[in-house]
Image 1 (cartoon, rainbow, N blue to C red):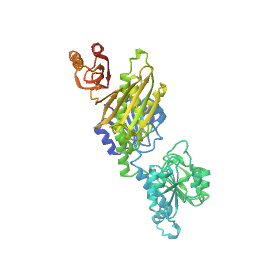
Image 2: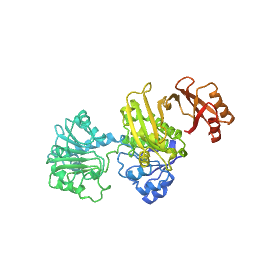
Image 3: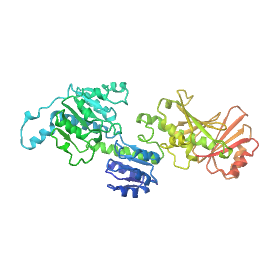
Image 4: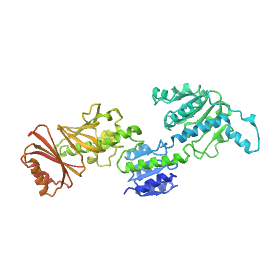
Length: 530
């Protein structure tokens, strides 16, 4: 049974969910060397921001299948190393969204009304109303840098304050922003217009020190800056200078380049409001992200797709519900193609695969379906573990040509996945769909049928549609003590060419397969392990 290691302070609800399903150890505060020594015994690792999952940790995790971050940021995880190793990295980006948005607005309002300074004055026994004159946020311009989950929630809430909303985010469509009441523009256009600026971008090489001396100089004199995203987004020395020369009226930081920040001069500035990374620190958020991370760990360990795999094709939650039933279908058709391919000794090489998505699934991003089909195709023939993360890379390394096609027409099925394996010999085509929440094989080459592969093996028999054919194959199976669970026949015309598909519970030996092939009405037979 797979084992899970938790090394950071994850909420009890997530730990309990894991422990109900798999053996789970909680070992907080492991030193890097201790983590490297321990990780080899585990299939999953759950962290927050404290544990650094470095390349040496990844390499030592010989059984690792998934690393989960109970939160949104994954900059403490080496994504490239995990991807090379075929390890899924999942996060929990939804659970703390509202908490981060609310903390952003709390800091913005505290800046506007000098709440921390007034509080400290009152605690000192003073009553200085005139010393803490503030401003209203109504009719002010809020510049949102990053219009993702948190940025969008900030926009929705700020609109109720009567603020004008502008945003910089090159990865969102203008019509999406317009539905939020936000005008998108360049960073250079936003900075001089905004009275308040809030950051909500991920940390990438392109966003590191996104707000530095040149950007601070562009800001409207008297603007206020809020950061509840990542400390590295701001040049802290440049921010201190902007506060000292009164370019900014104030700044509020919940995150810092180094955490804890230590003796940071910026913290001592009177117009700097600081909190110790509290953006996600609500009881509700911690419970939600812990459960969200645990659910995704269990999904990966059970061979199912996780909603928020960071280093694999991303599937939004609303799309996940549509595509998820077709992931095992795609894997099934890929495995069948490899199982039905000519014997490698026949000097037939894989050239490529064409994947055709029809029906409802065709209108969505099908990258996860492509990856699943490649897992099925390459898994049985690869010398290394193949999963939805590394399958496209392995296919590329093998020089396989991958073609994808889409069509809204899927005959009588809501959705259909058709895969054709191109070889240096004959092509092979199979098609599948999802019915009653399980994969069904509905086509092999020119034969249409309906097979739910519920047995360990499928026996495919090309035959002539003549009386006695089914009985002859059944007689061989009975004599060989091969139990048949079900049988389905596809044919083009009566008494013409047909294909028999038998679900069998026992291995079919080479001798048994040869005896079936030797029957006079049989053209070919092959068995596929499912």
